[in-house]
Length: 82
Image 1 (tube, rainbow, N blue to C red):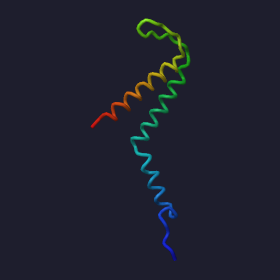
Image 2: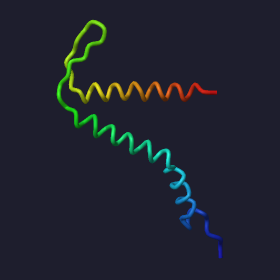
Image 3: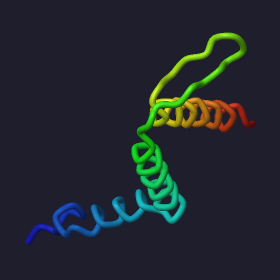
Image 4: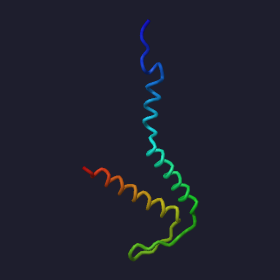
């Protein structure tokens, strides 16, 4: 009889999936989901002033934009570490 490959037994697939869901990644996914719920629950319009111009935009768009800018800044600073 030929020996079973690790993929046929199903154990190597379980190990690789377990490595994907670390406690840190689970926490980040939960926080992102909570942030998205918060953003899309706030749908009223609001006035935003950036230096001189004042614009009226939905609050969810302002929150989502601010979150995206924060995520980009965090990604940039974490890549620049030695």
